[in-house]
Image 1 (cartoon, chains in turn cyan, brown):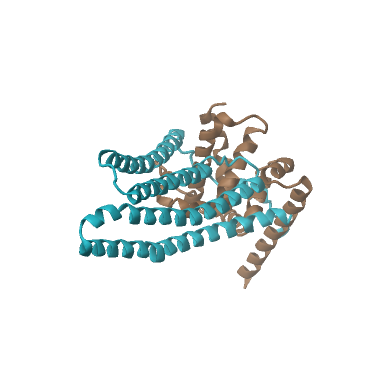
Image 2 (spheres, one colour; image 1 turned 120 degrees about the horizontal axis):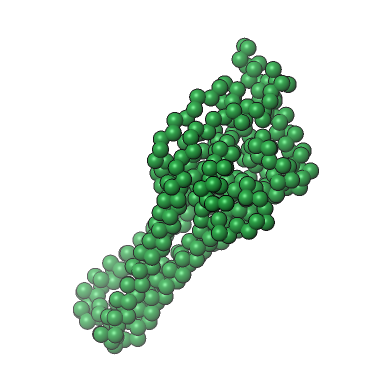
Length: 198
Length: 160
């Protein structure tokens, strides 16, 4: 039987069923675009409001100590750098048009994923560092006004929180993301190698 | 050509390509929808440098190839939902085997053989995958041999 197999005719005999309504595809496509835009806008708005709030507080209650000013600036820098990188990463991913040839497309995905992997790892460290130092400095002025005991209590809490983020949360998040990136990249490399080996 | 005309003209071809890639009718329908969502979004950027069919095959094959990558980002529940519940047609034994065997090949081989069986010219297959024409010819020959061997093995295992 083997030598007589007509692959072409078998292949075309696969029924595809009735063509689903085109309006649904258009509706879904427009919906996805809106959803993506909404997600991007909501994260940006939330963080922009936080920055706005910090600026507003500083404007109405000017800080006496330099530490408060430097701390606030560092917190704002942390938020802005996070926004910048996450917006860039998102646009990198969604601006990709999958109409390149397979080889070029896989190469592009590999380069984007590698870039995202680096950005994620580096930026997460910078974000936590700026935020932790910022909070630490910004609180000095008010903590000193509360008396020694309260000051020790508050700073113990802050140091525990920073330590927990730095030594538990961040490595956990980095490890999880690294695992995902590794899996994605190794598969993209494997498929690309199939083209290169031809 | 309007999007609706393009969709109607190419739906079946893209479904077969995706079906060959994943050998799962529901998943294949998701991939077809994802392909046409991309087509809808980028149609205004299509610059007649290639035939529209080749352009859509390129998008569909890339959508297929990035499946693992996509699955990590987008849970299947977030994928486009089919409103009309189209029942999977009952396939004959050999058709089922062919699609199963295609889906067992290496990822790029699945794309190449599906395009070949869809009567896409080898020059176009080369431009879709990123090969030279000669590579495609050699690869198609090897894939057909692999498929024949799979049928032969299956036939023999059925006898015993």
